[in-house]
Length: 73
Image (cartoon, rainbow, N blue to C red):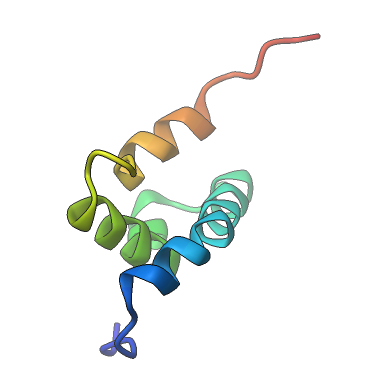
């Protein structure tokens, strides 16, 4: 993956919901873990987690949550 443009923590935090939505779509589309790990959303979620680990979960954790069976209502 080419070097993405520089981004600030404020921009990352503002776009966090978009990165989570993109990750959700990749999981829903049954993409392989290798494909998902090469995505921009994975990179940005990992960067947020490394920068602010007490506020943001790792992309691995988020993916595990998305892959869990959803309870039937």
